[in-house]
Length: 157
Image 1 (tube, rainbow, N blue to C red):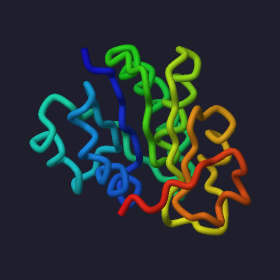
Image 2 (image 1 turned 30 degrees about the vertical axis):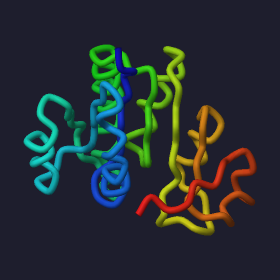
Image 3 (image 1 turned 135 degrees about the vertical axis):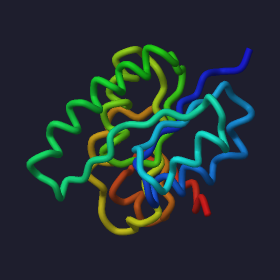
């Protein structure tokens, strides 16, 4: 029986990085979760019955963002209970934060890959997840100074 692994990220560059891990998908009973946007609706046809969507939210919309984040927290709990993954793999950002926290509550493993886009500063989600991740991977060697318990994994691309 294959281990259940949930791959989660926000849309855009974080999702592009996450999908670079697709050669790993078939080794697991996998599921992918991202934000629902026009640009990634085709994922359901590429990965049938393996994709779930959260509500797209950006911190730039500071009035609606807290409500969308709260909704996504509940939807993340729904997905977690439905899928029951043993491992969460994420390339971040805010979309993945609630899922990683839920995973830790249910004793699942969390693998966080800090985005390639940051080579000198921590991301907000990286700061949060660093303390709860079972494995924290950076894509720039100099990021080890900011995250001393991380491992350097090189670029996903």
